[in-house]
Image 1: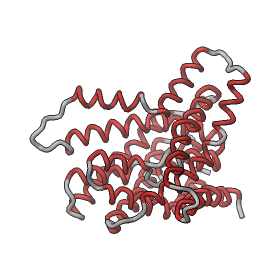
Image 2: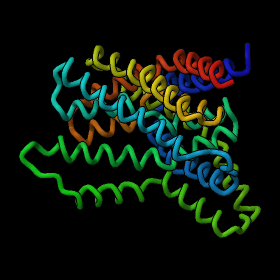
Image 3: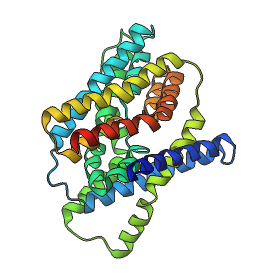
Image 4: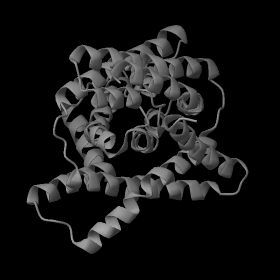
Length: 316
């Protein structure tokens, strides 16, 4: 078995173990929520803080990376919206949920440990450049679309309300706090005290395995409850259309091989829980979002191996 195949199996085996722990009742649903909160609120922010402090981002072209990735996000989101509204006859608010589900990669709980396992610290440095803007851009898009479609056609869009909501949610997010704190410490040029560095390293090292296990538990909590056909179509958009678009864009822009490979693999990640949270916010399409997330994650065990083979063939 090749090291890459072994890493893919290891990543999705941890997800499967989390799912089995919830399915068999070995861990209660409240335990899953606690583990997820630890991964997102403690381990991942410290991992991002550590990366911002230690890493050398020399040689990476963030504007080209961001342009290629988010151009694919926009096209895939629009395709998901049209599929949900035009083909399956759902309203515009459900269309926003469908679009978000087809374009919102699970960049933290699944993407971080996957990229670390496959490409190592250098790949995670590239991923960090995406993580730093992924949540703000996707959050702003969802808030604007909620403002447009979620309040009825008779109500005007209020820019100040959009900005206020965006800034409040952004700066309360622990991932953004971890990134900003790491950048602030990096600017000072001061070394972290040895005890502080040991604490950060110890907790950051748990981020990958804990996040994967928590992902499996969350899949058991959401499950599948109808809307299977649209969820399958949206999963195809997420797992095939979006990474294919990113592959084309990074190739056209001539991004460095490692940067290109990371961008495509992040796009190939299945949808995360944020798409479900958008549905909860709209109070529509919750079953669609949860089903799509579960189906896409199950299929991703195969599709990520496919895209990994493709990027290694194309970019070396």
